[in-house]
Image 1 (tube, one colour):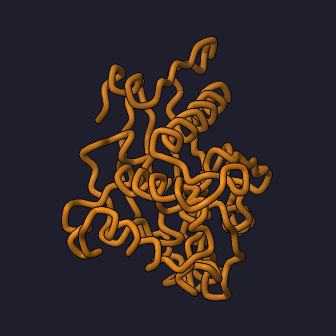
Image 2 (image 1 turned 90 degrees about the horizontal axis):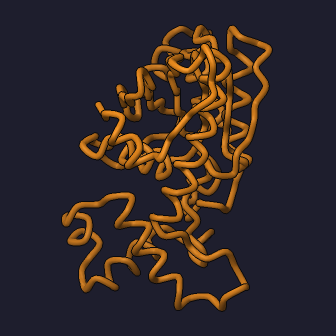
Length: 258
């Protein structure tokens, strides 16, 4: 649980002028998008985009069924097509049928610059080699979203001519945009009386968000899975990360046969 001082440190979140809704509780259901064609072909997919595969759509459908009785007051996704597609699947089955999806570019995945669309093992091998290690050795040192983003950003500087591509983002850039995006979402939710908010984002960005809110939180081995749900409660100035990468919504939806 983060006290308000920690919230200011990690989020810079100051919400004022909210009237009678100032102390409204907000529960964020942060969903990772479904599996895409680039996931399937093991390609780097940050700001690059691809549609969900048939299997990806099916699994998101299960998660949508598992979440259908949660009445969302607001819904956000990144502006990447795979996130929008996932959010629309979830909203189409939701008990609150009048919620309109809003997009926010700040919820995007990490930008990997010149590695976008390349094979994942190329990027991972390059990172490890830059440290004088094998991939296994580098991973054993302790993978974090911060160390990963900064390693890619450093490598990208010498791989592309400035102005030819969006440069890979370092962790400070990523955390700043995620912080600002979350700040605005929380402010809007509180001004509307709180409640449940759907957010559809991306694996590494969700991991970064969790690490920002609760540095002691343990991320799932292998990362946050497609169509999983990370639950964050904002209450009385505190953030509670209650679930990370929860697959029970998907599993319950699948079991229901709906």
